[in-house]
Image 1 (cartoon, rainbow, N blue to C red):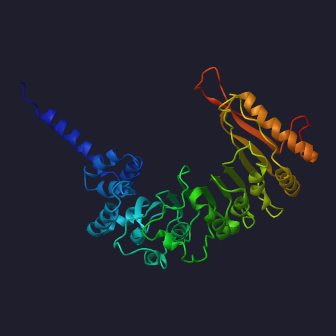
Image 2 (tube, rainbow, N blue to C red; image 1 turned 180 degrees about the vertical axis):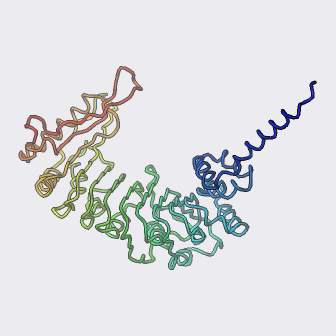
Length: 412
């Protein structure tokens, strides 16, 4: 093997020195580069082990989002979280987004995360620090708790059918701008509260105050009685509402859907489970319009969902739609007159065949036009929308169709 000459050694030494200049880049450039890996935990872990200069930035991004969630081993979650905060207390300041399931008594642990902006909190029943801590004593842990840093709160369903627990937890976050309450739409049992949660229902809940809430997505049917208290607590700050409720009685729905104080609403989307094969089904949709008035000057769009009726199990064809009743047409006419810029959309739920959508549109349009002829003057503001299936392929894509609800009138 030939020996290297002095010139070749010198050239190699210069090459090594030029490569070392990379390590002398300003720290801001390294930080910017590492920030591009946000969400790639494997790469961030590798960066944190590469050199000391990269470690702080990579560590900060690694702990930006923390998951401490357990569906089967509820009692271990607070223990793990408590151990983490005791062993590495500085990590709490790095967390901006937290996903956690906790018993009611351990919710105060969340206050350690002082820079947290987004929180997904599942409340676990049946697991408390002390088996005797039930009812009022458990909820008392939340009385003085305030976590002002959280602006986005998601509350997924974790056997939480107690409206008292829900509202007590909600009151701990006074600066919310976004609230998502997700429930199990197939389980609306009222008797699932155990270990003191049922007793807590009798405890008075302090008045909610959510003056900064702008967006509300509510899909928790077992907590439907809390909905009007949330909308009243938000008042004029609320701009966007999306609601999905199941198994709400016709008498109760008028009280649940109260948007009278939300005068700055821009979008309202309401989906309620009901059957169009029962006479007077329009009352459910009329309830969503009943509190909308001339003061809702910012309201641009109202979406009211219609169910997709299943075929009759005996005859095969789709079941016939019955009359919606007068209340829907009456409230719809009033809203169209009070708010000349609003668009009301009746949306057929789920992808359906063309003739089924035609049946739904024809039934609703005929009833409304016959009882309230003036509605036919608003083809651009009164719409019917459905997802039309591309039936060339049974599982193919769907196309959104948007047509006037009452056809035949000239466009505005």
